[in-house]
Length: 242
Image 1 (spheres, rainbow, N blue to C red):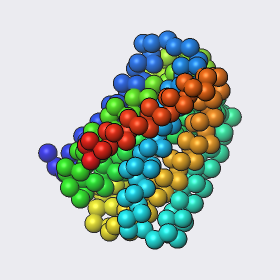
Image 2: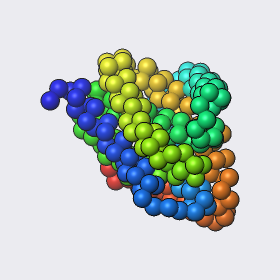
Image 3: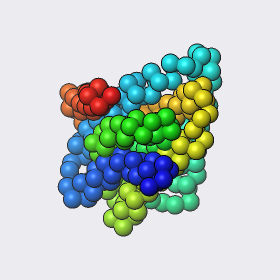
Image 4: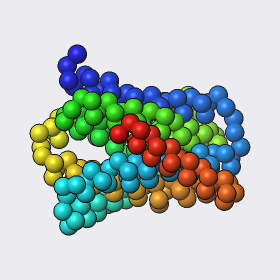
């Protein structure tokens, strides 16, 4: 198997975890407050990915001024994503803008997974495998929350399944970009790309995913436990595998 096909295979690991979460949302009917709790858990995983896996790697070689610029570009791109979602909602009445921004947050998380796997595999195949395995279970809450959110808003099952299947695209795209464009590009370029993804992921999580998680009205202690559990799980998984 060629190196690139191996990277794509590794990229399917986090996508598989997301798909499991999406299918669980189809089989299990839960109240709206449980959806909010799952969204808080997904937010905890996303924040842990940034603070534990991505930011330390970016800080190793990236000057502060360049990190700020790359992060700002990612934040600006997040705003463009929101504009794109609003435009799409005006033309296609499927789910609310908030639900689609949750989808974008989860998709961006998968994009970052693919980017890390592709870049890591360009350095060493073992690193790519480690990054892929670390995201399998961690991505289950994101897939569950996104699909349960669409289901709660009355989106048809056929459309939900198509949306769930589309989650494989960002992770494969990220892996391809990480492998081909960042391969041999140098640590500065790789770190700048990570900072850009951090900007997109953080803004999508804080500005869209968390407010959407608060809408169902999950009690504070449950949302706090869910967020903390998602964060702690990713931290422990990263520690034991890293």
